[in-house]
Image 1 (cartoon, rainbow, N blue to C red):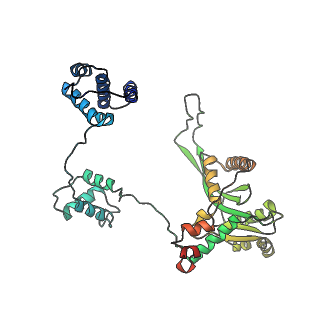
Image 2: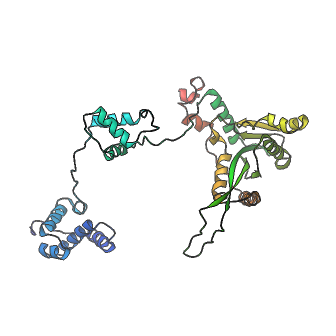
Image 3: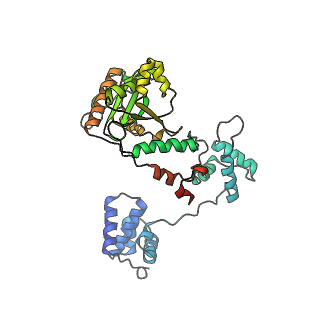
Length: 377
């Protein structure tokens, strides 16, 4: 046997196997096979190898034969085990997928593994099926009927396209400072206080804080973002009424852009985001003065991702709000500091989605009568 199957490793194979044995960072069975190959390469007899490693001479012989026949990788690995025959046929598996995608039984909100196993027993010749058999077949199909995900699928109508291209046009323009484009939105945030003072971090010890906390209500953040210049502003309020919105628009005109002749505001379709909110909050002459400068551009319904300020809100949440802040003054102070630092570093949102890319990416969803010429061709 020793004459027929001689192990002769290359320098690279010898180095790799020696490193594997020295590290020990692999399964014991694979390590033993590596030791066999290294010992056989050094000219040690099968019987000596078997005694030193604690295996039979026949095992040493098989490892050497696998190496000679198909190389190191084959000698180190296990042969695939046949295992038990699959309990479900292809037809059964198709039926299982169909049942899992159907409406669950009356009185149940969703399919479970037990319910699916029972349904398949009734529909096939199987006398019984385990939940594990059902689980494995569903796992192979990447199907989890007990999970649900909520998603809003907008209808890409002519109105959707018109609003989208209107907003994208504003982003790709290069307006003068007297005609800025400002993205606007609002987001709530919870005021969470500590019941016990957190312990500061130390070398080898992370910061520790109590899992109990105190709810102190909510606050609202109105966020402004200039689409073309490195400027943003966050206004903290206790509420988000129509009057609060109107006050934000007056701040935009009188405080943030006092010399602007026209301010194009990109915003969503919230019920308070209307010119009427200004008339409800201010005298008619004041509301009309502001609306002569303000120009509202609405994103399509269910497409707030087209509002650039959504990205800035995400940055604010990660960099500043990802912690417990217990009261309104602290929240105001922390956000003011974040806002100042962000403006001082002249951070910008790099928006890449323009009308050309929208028509290219969404050509199949554009209304047929409004298909872009490139798509129609």
